[in-house]
Amino acid sequence: MSRNEIPKELQKRLEEFHVKVPDIPLKKSKVDRIANWIYAPAKSPIDLLNIKGNSITRLVLYPFILLLVVFITPIFFI
Image (tube, rainbow, N blue to C red):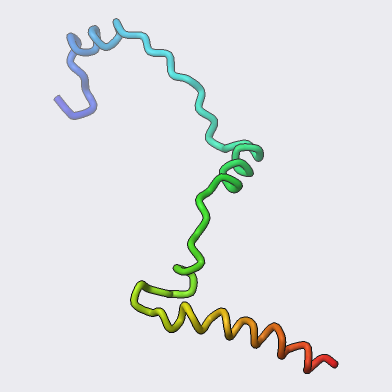
């Protein structure tokens, strides 16, 4: 007997059961995808900047660098 063959007794028992399999859509609708995108958890900006618990200097310096860039950059466009 090979692996693909099922004994007659077992086949008879299996045929006694009738199972209804629900249709599960393989592709999500656009509304579901948009809802998943909207309600996805936000990433922490501290993780994006590679700021760890012991790097207080980065945590303090990044806002100052951002302010300098924002206020000094318009000078070059005057």
